[in-house]
Length: 374
Image (cartoon, rainbow, N blue to C red; front, side, top):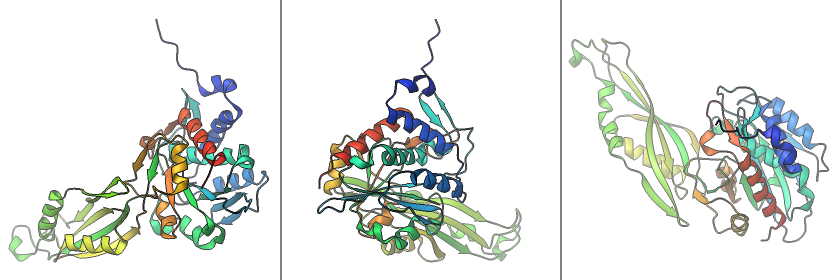
């Protein structure tokens, strides 16, 4: 006997709470508006227009295709100021139309990170008046590209009100686990120079690819370096991600270029990370650094982080990858990663996320915001 298929979101929507229905509808709405990196304007316009219908604490402030939304301002003594933060852009992957199917929402960015954006919007629309803190929402563009093109940087520079934040929560996909801190990352273009020659007489040239053998051997022997910070382990790793060289099948190559991606622990500065890469490369090659992104400390002992843990997060892990918590950390603002999107679905073809995670993430954040103490 064939099994009865699980009910779809639309089949069961009538049995859900109003907030759950709104979460599903909002995520579908967000996924139906394409926003690949560099094309966030339409979605930014739509989110700004939707939230402008709410009774806000002040006007929405726009910077390029990013917005800062002051939702609640009581300004009572000792009352914390929290920012929920999410990026509007998605990577460019193959996805069908936004749809609800089998208890999941499908669409570009469903996990990374429109699930988080949906939770932010529905909190503003359904629970904002009840929260026990001042609340700001930040929606920003161009996260999925180079560090210097990310609009959160200019937003933080321009918006003075964001400097009063006590804790920023970046709603990156984390399966409702709390991801503390983040590793820093940089890319290094390493170039070996040689001299062309005929491959029949290689002694007349200087093979740039062969000159890289010592560095490649060192990289092959590298093992992750573990750093324990606040009880959580972060790993320093260096990986060759690109290689390019040679002019032809019968020509001794006069140039060979490697891209090294170096990930480093929260206790390591950018200057120290650059020095470590230079020492690894050694003599015989030039090094050019690009896309330098600092690390962020875990903030595990912060009272607001502890209260978020108590609100029922699914677990606590160190963030081995890089996220924009580092931008807040650089300004002395504690920040953590917590979001309802499925981490494994990020950047996938036919991306989706489980609606149960969406509902759970909303409940955890609302419970935290309503019962917040410092």
